[in-house]
Image (cartoon, rainbow, N blue to C red; front, side, top):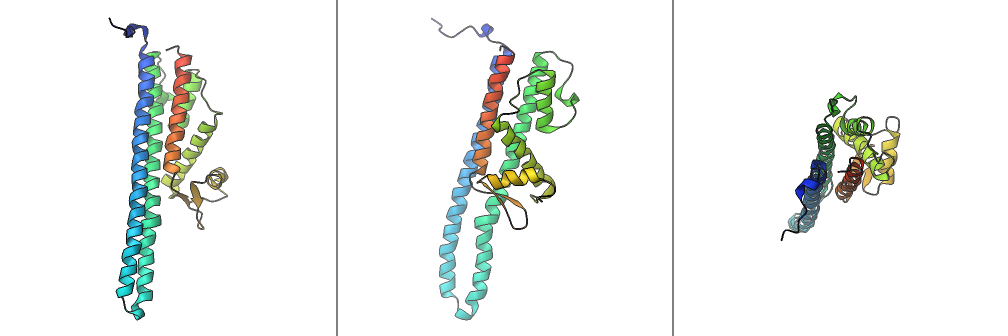
Length: 227
């Protein structure tokens, strides 16, 4: 006896929308694992480097120790600070790209399902905000624009643009909202030269926020189209 429901009772959207969400969540979980493994690996490398540095200093004549210490401090800074920051930034930019792809795919899926002539590419703007406008204005979706998670994602957009277009450099005159976001987030730092730096935990936070948003949006879409 087949206890599974007849597939014909399900619309294409009821299958496709959760599949899109699952695919995004799966990729973000992989990125979280990569970030966690990177943090562990670099921590172990920094500890090992410190131990090896102490051995080198003991074997070095006193008149050369100060010079060696300066060299070792610079090398340690690269391992403990520079490398993690660069990798976190790269992972974050990849995370944001996955979000954009997801939203555009959802828009294309709904456009095809509803047999609309207007596509997301016909809407003014770009990126996640163009997709938002398409869902709201063309498809009449109750988009969670006032949701705290979407507000955080909007700041991710500012952060991504700051990295891509300004190398992470920020000033109070040009982007006060991003500066406030950075100061309020325990996983972000603003250096003395006004450059935003991602700290341990930010990659995971961003992944969790986007997954939470995708879950909320999927539920709203299924409700909107009675899929």
